[in-house]
Amino acid sequence: MAIPTFVDQVTLHVYGGNGGHGCASVHREKFKPLGGPDGGNGGDGGSVILRVDHRLTTLVDYYRQAHRRATNGEPGRGNHANGARGEDVILAVPSGTVVTDADTNELIADMTSDGTEIVVAQGGRGGLGNAALASPARKAPGFALLGEPGETRTINLELKVVADIGLVGFPNAGKSSLIAAISRARPKIDDYPFTTLVPNLGVVVAGDFSFTVADVPGLIEGASEGRGLGFDFLRHIERCAAIVHVIDCATYEPGRDPLTDLEVIEAELKAHGGLEDRPRLVALNKIDIPDAREVAEMASGDLYDRGLHVFPISTRSGEGLRELIFAMAQLVKARRDSAPPPPPKRIVIRPKPVDVPAEFSVEREAELWRVRGEKPERWVQQTDFSNSEAVGYLADRLNRIGIEDRLLELGAQPGDGVAIGGANAVIFDFAPQVEIGAEILSRRGEDQRLIEERPAARRRREKDRAYHADEEISDVELGSEGDDA
Image 1 (cartoon, rainbow, N blue to C red):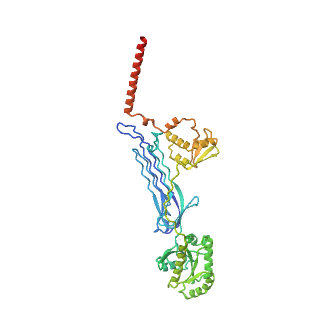
Image 2 (cartoon, one colour; image 1 turned 45 degrees about the vertical axis):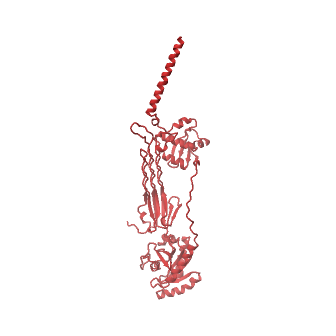
Image 3 (tube, rainbow, N blue to C red; image 1 turned 90 degrees about the vertical axis):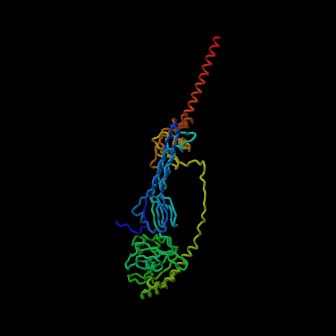
């Protein structure tokens, strides 16, 4: 199967890299076998990023390779060695690419400026190692946090050519010939219908002013309902400042004349929608043919009466092209002058609020209590449930933001099922810790082997104990002699 050279719509599956797991490690060296936690953090996963490249004109690179995945972050290691970050995947797209979410059809970005970037699949954050989890209350964590999974999304990419002037008309009306005559573009030109299969784009210079012109291939009656090729390419003139009707005055097809052609194309533009406010120009083409010139002269009066600006032209001889070029330039300049100036670039620093309680919700669903929230769901993903200390650390985190209190307020009883998350939720048996003392909670997540006394301190303590024991024995002996006396 041959890959087409022009593709303006694709569905892309993107996967952010997973974050690397943190490391649970104990520092060891000679005469210091248990020197404390030294596990490093896992690296963040790479992200999938779209970037506008003005040199591209098609989305064909994603036609057959519709799955793009960033690399995972590396796990942390001992001796405080953090894992490497995963590499980002940067996908180049043409200017004018519209990005939408395939599941919700929500607009994500309209990318028109060269170099614009947007992250479409965020990499997961790396998990903390046990060295980073150490605190005065938890001096020796015997666990580390897992890396978070990367974001997975399905997006639609739709290319809408960024052009100032859009050319519309029946097949073989001379749109491609007009672009070739007024710019350096060299589209395929031939004498049969649907010669042009892709939109052509050319840069036109009028004095010291330049603008771009694009055409819509294969626009015929019924195009808005799927006939011909025009339905697939009408989107490429949605950004245009003005529309130019290119009308073939030399056609011998029955039922065709300039006024009828204009009405048919206008009906299709109206059915497509969104183009009613664009100013129109009419180019009556092929007046180098005597009969076509006569047709153009007869049609001009009626077109003027409709308030349209008419330009009889010949793409072969060049007659009338200069006037048409400067008329198009005037419309484009007026559109650009009326556009609001871009806002000045300012660096805005928005500090994150401090000590704001985490947002979460608790609802009763059948026989479960459902807890939803960005933080609780993320914490569950970071937890190694095969490690009891890690589970205890999770319980402390959830209790600290008030989930346990909220469950008790709503009437949750010990043993009730509590699900945290959505479809892939983790389910717990509710076991409130209200009656557990602070002393027990403070030891949760500690490895007692790592907080033993150092040998020198232990020797001093044993020596002091032996000295005090001798003093106690001497006192007892002296007391005994006094009693006998």
